[in-house]
Length: 488
Image (cartoon, rainbow, N blue to C red):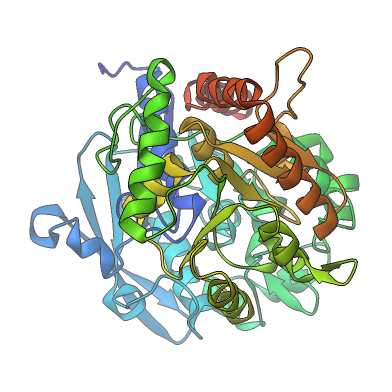
């Protein structure tokens, strides 16, 4: 791509980015969106922490820019070193082994200090590199204070004066709420501890800083943005979004990397296929069953690939229907079931018990393996995502990409991406239910199972409809560019 003088420049800031470090969908978005923005003419660079896991992908000696500087963290200084890897998506890494040379990305007692350092290091980096963005695109709570820091500390510097800020909420549940030490770490005066600024629920919120001081806020689906303005889903910030910030909020649905998730070329599959060779999907199913010891029959194979948490709807699987456990009712339909994921102990134990009860008809993998996940997408007939709330959801999109029919609860991005099948018009991409109850989850699985066995042509039509859907980043990237230009 040839760079032009007036080319839009964007710095995308994220705490995790594929292929370097990932715990969830944020990393997929931060890895795929910049690629499409670049294709569409935006000069994009990404910045993230240099975690221990990143060292597998980025050689420090080769990537070192020679740029280092001290960041004041309350009573002590910490050094930030800038690494840079010029690939298809040019990426900066903030290196500080005290904060980031650890086994995991999050969940440490000093996360407040770690990500305060990251935000301050990103803000200071702008005046030290050869890239001054028009837009700084911040993602989730770990990046929330960046717009505030730049507006508070760097307003006098001409390099910063024309920068505008977009803050994207990927999951409102995680807000980065800490004590008053946050102000000292960020170098902010105590006036920011008031309810009209960073104070929230007795603490100080990283995410609230992003909401208040960004020039625009967006979420990863239009429906989720509207849900966040309600007490049910707003996590205590609904009134702020509904009454004060409504004028600068919107939603853009996520996409997926359609090159990476393509059943026609995916190296993880037993057999590659597309809309013109859908019969090979059945061969993937039988090969998967054979490898993992499931009975070779024509039963419908249902899958879950997910974090095992309340958010994802697993608590409704513990409910009963006329005195019988929901999971037992589902298995009474004669289906086979596969689960892949990790999460809360009660749900891991629930699926362990489930495997014990149905050893020849169920598989439970309490880990995450991307190659195995793609095998499961290709082998499954139906994919479950009964979430209580879902900002966007990528699992149902990936499932549809592989011709696997989603059953979802009508919320957030699930509502925006899945259309209930209409047997008369032959339109639709899956099955939806509204009420958050195990009964309705069971009824939709029953409906899908009836269609699968008694009306196979209709079931195949849904699969084909799914595979013809376009969930690549092209259209969403266009909307992001329009948003950048609007706030520029």
